[in-house]
Image (spheres, rainbow, N blue to C red):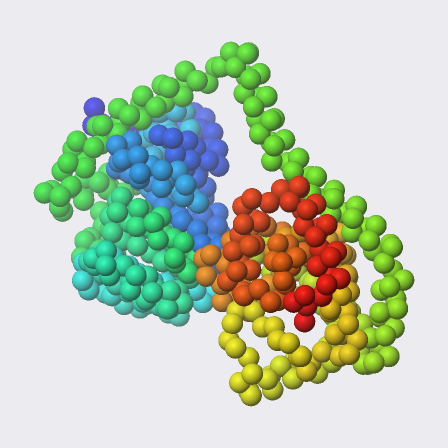
Length: 493
């Protein structure tokens, strides 16, 4: 049974349908979770990922992709671990119809790209185009910039390079400063390449886009709108490139229809589980949710109770310290600073002021004198910006006690990676960004192991170890170690 024979019956207009089909926000086809969202929702999500400092992987799924995912376990695993899968083509719509579901919108890359370019130009995000034959990416970039004034094309590169050249290609992408990377190497090579190199890339939104550059470089023309509305754009592609496309469409389409029908039948068979199966599934879901929620609840309870108690007991010390600060140096007693928290969210972090009011001007003087080393974090012994009282309260970590208020608010935890400044996070690579996967804390592993005497790279390693292996027991152990570490004053400046 050919795909084209089913289309007139299955792809009717909404006016002809007796009742609208249900449209869940996410559907599962061929063991893949595919987003079923509108174009505005898709664009809002993509631009949020472009603004984020956490790299994400977004891929498109069509009938050909579904066939390959069944036959190629490595490719299927990449799709399953993608941050979002967008539906591309009438094949996905057909598969959903067979399961009694509707598709909100066909979000193919060719139609999506103009919206992405307009939004990127408006927000100043640069694009890097990687893939295609020599000259195709550059020509596509030229035409996109003509169509979208203000669009920044950070760089282009064809897809013909060896494995030995890959480090240089990645270095060029990172050096370009692009926030969005579009890779056009064909399925499944582009998805496998992106998944393999995602940790080394500094780009925020990474997408595999197939033959997209060929269309926008006008090497390949799109089907007339009438064919596209009927879901028969594949016939146009077949007429244009029969030697390359006949296997995909003439053999692949019937195979996809059969697999979609079988997938729908299996879904219907599983839709009516027994009472015992439903009870077991409910217990497993509850156990899974409790397993996720209880450690977080325990950590939050520990944070709130300890922070509230500590603030109450230490209030006399805070008042005396505030008076000493004000007597030595005029100005506000508290110092608020923007820091980056969980998942890149900024918040206001509070400290007792330990520096003179003109600390920023003194920092600029140090920078102009070449005193600073250029590392991601700036710390120096005998910092001339610090007051005499400031040296004492820093040595004993008294200056950080107001952060107990941040802990009460939930911006911070007692234990976690130290919150970084926005300019420090901007200099992070993929490895350093993993520090942002946990709520920042007042103390953590490297704070009880030498504090500022520990090199930044080692601090990152310790923080990553906590992020991926920390527990409530770990928190209690680190809190107990914090007291002698503070009293010793090692690495505090």
